[in-house]
Image (cartoon, rainbow, N blue to C red):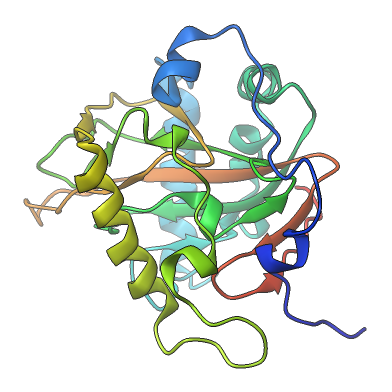
Length: 256
């Protein structure tokens, strides 16, 4: 198998480059997110937390280079598939995108991500654009003290950012720090559009669904004595070409 670089430039001359979400959910259309309060029951959440901790202690799963993210933990912790394939969650996702969705990636956290403001669409892009949707699951009560989630309502209405927009080289030679260029671009977009930051004060079992283009990130984890147990799942929309815009790599979507 031979892979070549793949980014938005390969689709620039094609028509219909954006697939808009179609839904009757007004909050989704206007703000770019939906909350499913207490979507997961306490027993399931407790089992997830116990199984994750056991897998960490036994060395079956570990953090990636950020020392905050555990990628693809469902491969070693089967109970996570009950979240990923949760019938109520998947039904809502498919209602929002108007199509079938395929789970692509899970990320588990024990501490706050403290990740800079970004939208997922530039990391996990698609053709047509907009073929991604994600959930964030609170596995305990989460607020500003233990590094909760922040987002900028209405930012999903911005044009989808590409490497060309942020000044990144494409092709065989990548820019030295494409992610930093992108983060600087996002900060300018926030300032230019006067977007207002909101914090998600989540209760255990809450699920937040966000639009592929919604700008979001992690608040500072102020109280280091507290954990911030949470889980993210990214889903690609069926029948889309999937790739990573910044790194220009194809995305292999197998389902979970």
